[in-house]
Image 1 (cartoon, rainbow, N blue to C red):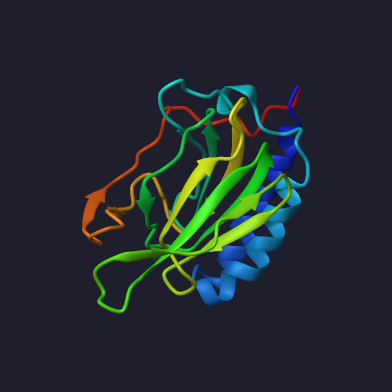
Image 2: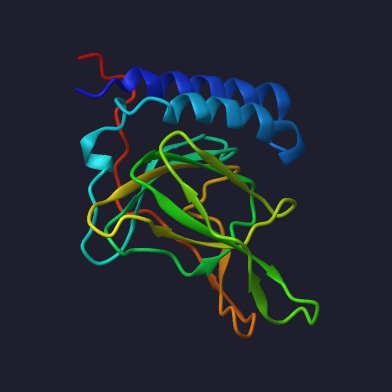
Length: 195
């Protein structure tokens, strides 16, 4: 049985954090980084229903969204060979690796402001975290680093990421296309479960 109390404690701490500090990137990223780091340091709390891969594409399960949409917590489940297009977030975000490994490639605009240039690929392993934001760098591409099994990362965003209007990019031309990701399921974990 998953130790759902770890998730409940994270939600309580994160709610208190945004209540005390607000949701601006400069005030929230460092303490939220510490909270997410503690959550992904243990792999005994994620309910099985939110760790199921899909054979066709990655899944994005909503674990919690603050009622005032100040933050959301999502499990991303990557099947073998699955990844995202080049995309942005438009809000601050933290990615914590829970199981497996994923590759992340940042992109920045070339001097001509048209094409996108890839940066060095990073590989996240369990317990490692990465930050994205409009200030720090918001465009990247993510993929499962394991060819033979799923990987799971936990993402914390400064808004309801499933409802945020974002962009996917063609790296060769820099052309952007709007999208709203939504979620892979219409249910969330019962954080009050005691058995």
